[in-house]
Length: 327
Image (cartoon, rainbow, N blue to C red; front, side, top):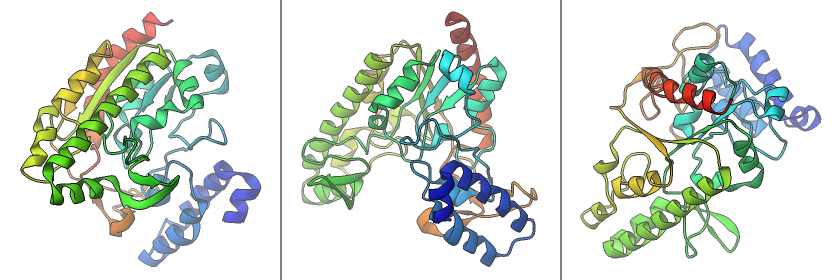
């Protein structure tokens, strides 16, 4: 698979893997699934969007390329003519906007409802700093309008602890998770952990300010979470090492500060629902690979199909109005 990827490109190699695996998945064994995962999909090394590696039996994300140096994004892709003409809208965020394990994510539902292609720039574990990439900014600036998710605050660091979700030291990404660093701080002195959360929050706010200044398009700021913004605050860490459910390290005060930058916002807080996973080939129950936890036949961490339906219904009127205003 590595040779195939290198010779024909990741998009073609992935398409081939999805098509050929479909034949094998008509009557799979657990061993067959494991072989496909370890010997085929993991070797594709899909830059930026690992979910297809783990979810190949459940969902075809129709991953597509915008540019070779950017991640592969969830499809269907925007037609080249529409992309060149700026006749599309963007959604920007993490797994909740990408729509992991859901076949019809809210972004695709809105696209169909308003008859306008969507460019979904979201991906696994993305923080807001990912979208300061000049090429990605160009894609967002070219869109008619944008829905921008409030992402986790754990990936926005500071001078002492730079990098993404894993700390970068001496220009090298370490195996140290940012939240583990906070826990170590808390065990020594909770006030130090609080100090750094506030520093990271300040930088998080600055990233969203830069995105607003650079994009210059109608933007709706979107909160997606199983909790409300006020259900966690930085001061909570004084009593115990808690970072809040997704979006981690973001409380009501920070949400209000970020919201003040943008003209429109929407909050979607919903109790998590357990949803079973089914084969894209047979429609029967099937597992997906839950990264470090082996396989699972249901999910709860990610928004359910019902949540995606609710979000699409709530956001479509705004998107339709934005489409008309930018015609």
